[in-house]
Amino acid sequence: MLSEQELELLTAFVDGDMSRRQRKAVLRLLHRSSEARAVLRDLQENVHRLMELPKRKVGEDLAPAVLQTIEVRGLKPTPPQLVLRRRVPIWARYAVAASILLLGAGLAYYLISRSGDNGELVAKGDKIKSQSFAFQELAKADKRDLLARELRKERAVHLDLKVRDNASAVQRLRDVFGEKGVDVLVDEQAKSSLAKLERKVQYFVYAENLSPEEVQAILHKLGAEEAESQWHNFQSVAVASLSAEHKTNISSLLGVKEADFFMGRVEESNLFDQTVIEAPKGKGKKAPAIQAAPQRLAVVLASTGEGGAPSQEVRQFLASRQQLRPGTMQVLLVLNQTV
Amino acid sequence: MSADDNRLIAECLAGRNAAFGELVSRYQDRLYNTVVRLLDNAEDAKDVVQEAFLNAYQSLHSFKGDSLFFTWLYRIAVNTAISQKRRQKSVLRLHGGEGQMVEPPDPSQSSQPGYALEMAEEERRVHEALNRLSPEHRAVLIMKDLEGLKYEEMAETLDVPIGTIRSRLHRARLELRDIFLQNTSEQHEPPHPQPLSPKGGGED
Image (cartoon, rainbow over all chains, first blue to last red):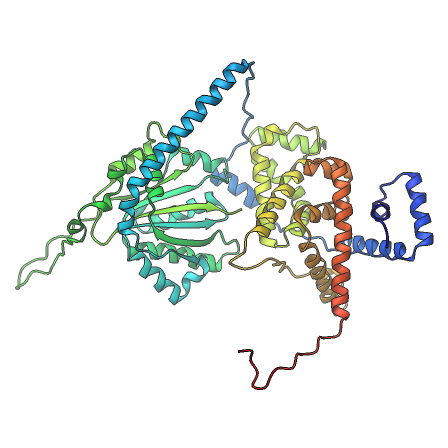
């Protein structure tokens, strides 16, 4: 049995990383020990195996793809930030640390007390059994039906999307929402985070007055594309009721009161009081003209939103809000980049 | 740093993005070859390499030229790949699995019948063995044996002392040897006799 030190000598010998004295020691070891010779042979064979692996090439399309991504995302080489260092007295550091602790404790107390208020509100609508679907499976009839059933259960849903790349996902969602007549606005802060390729940032896409069928069609469209795609940007979607935490987050990012935000909380009778346009009875009477649906907007927000004055996009979105129409819902998509 | 790289970086900083395209074309295959061996998945490797280039592009101002541009780029890509490998190991993959090296072997390597198949089989065996190592051990072996990097370059890439590289390499080589020995002995073992099942079968 070779000692650890002898094994170290043998692996160093394979890498040619040794002094003259060590080299002599290895040669002596190899001369007297058949086990050492066997180990060395194995180690050298393994080096050979790795060296013999064929060279892989990425393909000609990478450089154009990189340049295109740079253009689409509007990327630029960012000059490093200048950091001014000043001498801060030690007492001032302690004072700042103590203030941060106090602020943190206060904030935690505030958030906990607020989440308690919302819990009751959420429990009423918490009907969807959380379900996760791989996008590529959405083409299957059973999955599609299951998704449709879940979506019809609620008027405020949360869709958690796992994606490989947030920026491309946002762009694709804008296109697909656009096809459904929903213009997607990207908040200033979100634009900036997307351009910086900030991986840890979550992106919220919030829309209202979408029917379950429209949401299903959007997801189905993305799923159909994924089935044909080589890249698989959209990986999975988990469907659940909109949680209290998300309501708090989204209303905070929009700069509105939570009660205002949750428009689905209006009286049940209002929500289901569908104004059915019936064909007039009797001959010669014309059907009333159906009014065009108001412009629908969705907004993309980043979890890094710092509050303050709402961006132009947020203001535009808030100005466009309408009472929830019967049979429609509030939809929050949360994008999580997995790579 | 290569004068040519230097020129391309300067042009890129001056706003000529095509210059960055030249840098990508120049280094993409070398970078990809390492990353694909680290991740064992062609698509993931392509994504990581692309992200590495995009990160490098955005950080071009911070590249001071005290190392080779490729070394700098390599560091970004390898560390991204190792992080991803760590995540893959810790997360149960729900959709699809590891080991999706689906690229066919290069047909130009040999026209002998069966050669390509043999090569592909050997490649699969090596990747299976590598997959059983930790991402850190796998990385040092690939950098040393596949890329021929020096200890100093490996230490700079992984941002660890040279002593750590030595010790990782030592451990990785012994582990890999054990794995291959284990695999070989499993292949040569006679098949286990089937246990006699009780009458009527089943274990209820």
